[in-house]
Length: 173
Image 1: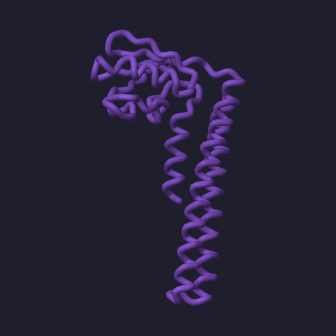
Image 2: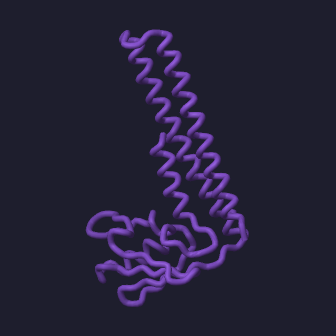
Image 3: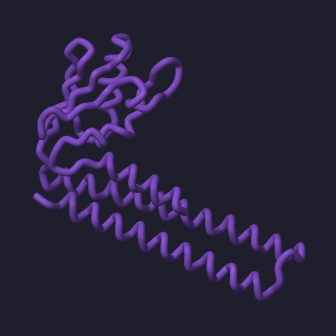
């Protein structure tokens, strides 16, 4: 369940607010060397200005692949290659774009909730199996299921809180 929370936090880093941040491009995957690799393994990302990111590609042959991966990622960025360096201007956010990004944040949060519920389901299945095999008593089974449900509720509340914070951050002008 903690893994789902940390994954959600990483996903939220990729959703941009008003200014350029290197974490915006962390989730980008580049088709390179016969597979998909994180951008951080093929290039260095820097934010020299508040509205500009620069991506320095280490292997010149991957420049077009990196440019395409950034363009297709879905953040509305339009990278421009200059040799091994790719300049990525970060446009200001319109109200419509803020709402679109907010919807994406909602989808990320729902994926995290589903992951937490799947962990709960797996835990419940394991408890039922232990009870059937006689490893735990009826009272222990009830106590453990209540604990598991409380943990699930706590994690889902944390996810909802993170989503609310991100939406507020996105809607600030």
